[in-house]
Image 1 (cartoon, rainbow, N blue to C red):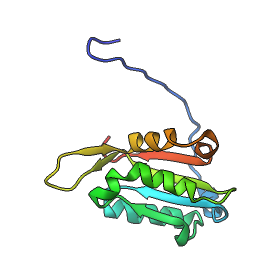
Image 2: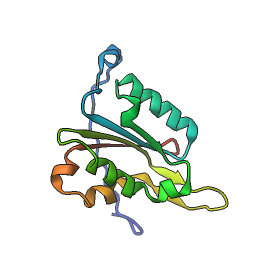
Image 3: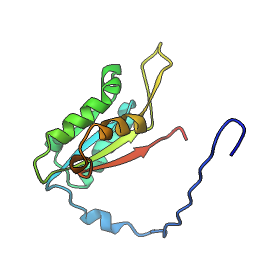
Image 4: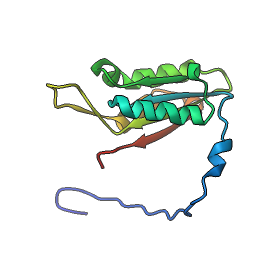
Length: 139
């Protein structure tokens, strides 16, 4: 505990994996829908390539975040994506932590907050079909 904040720290040692050839055989083409939310077009292109390398068909991939409306509506988009899944479908969501609105705004939307807001609106059965990965180039 500190005077102005409470800090929780968790350390989970993970084995280092230097050999990544298993990714060449990864195939998420059946039943996985991918959603990427990032305010940087270049990062969305990179995420599109990641989804393609995992075998996720282009028609099952959505890339958003380059407009203020998309950023502000991220939680709604996540909920809609899960609701649109087939009964045995899964959602792979990769969201940027710091979603900056366009200039002249200095507002930043938290990607993890948007994801948590969306998950809180879902029943547990739908939440369980969603894998959320939060990434950031700012931290």
